Length: 469
Image 1 (cartoon, rainbow, N blue to C red):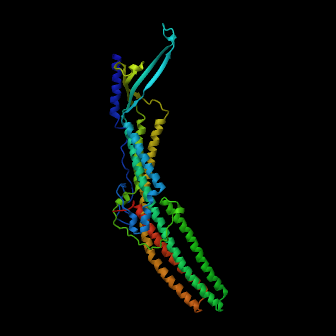
Image 2 (cartoon, one colour):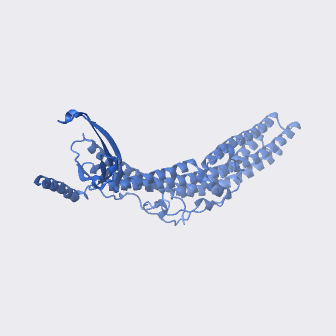
Image 3 (cartoon, helix red, strand yellow):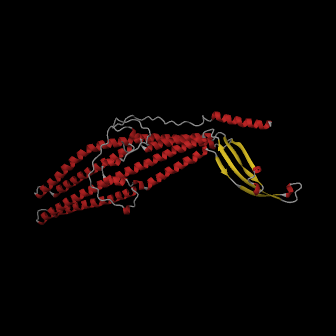
């Protein structure tokens, strides 16, 4: 009896000692401070970002007021990358449920039947092998006392990784929609450029006809005729090259909306779209809603929780176990009251020597936290860079737009004037060729400027986390 009481006291002392130290093992998570500017260089109405990507975002692509783009965006849900990202969210949610299950006791029902033959030589008066049955109907219970926070931190890490998977999903959605808009504006630009080249091809055909008439009348040399034919063919080559690019962009759009390129086609999109003005006074919370920043922050919180899990491995693991049920050598008596059996008691696992594995696991967890912290800070800096790039890009492209328009207008006038001078015999056909080339290049630059402004607007919206109230 004295020995039994001593053993009970030892177990009780271990239990009380465990309770006194359980709160000091796992570090509480705190978002690290960041040494970054309070404002954007291009716009003073900004501040340091903190993830808030759960804020609802609108259908930002509708600001471009293009029905075809709106219809295409509705099909993004069929994209296979997006479907895979949604499945990863489900996977992360199931991991949370699995880890949460460790908080509660586990109860198992394990029916068992054994038939044993015991040697007759083991018993002094036994003459032959003794055969008997053993029937068991036990309910077994096991429960780990989470004194060091291993289970709690495992659940916490799984929850943060689940939140990170949601942020990753939102980032995939935002990236796909922005990529679709970018490809659509590229397609629109190619269609407008093809239309422009076809108009210039008509001009070159008319020029060729004029030169041909002058050549037949003996007013110009055959060289001028060859030059006119060469310029006409060069424009045809450019048209075919742009048609190849258009086909590739159309195929890319098909994949983005989850369709086979062979079954997808878009009519020429030559509508000239306007430029939605992103308000200069947008609230800074837009940057805070970037899903990639939120994902990096939540992954950092998860790795912090993993440190607590690794530290808990240095301390005893105390598990309460027990079973209760029926046991009998006769199947007819298996549920009789006299056949009841039970047992209960704690088990303690002391990690005395692990060959340095626990220490290595802890060092690994700490290193992973440092990596995730660096990734988070890098995401913040990249986010600021992307907004700065987009803001400065829009400002510069808008300045460039007026110069490009003036250049295109002047070059077109010069091209028309040079053709009149050539017909009057005042200049050579080289001047006409040069003027037509400059005019075409200037007009193509104007189309390119419009495309770049639209795409840069999309990049700015993406950099801000997508949409606003």
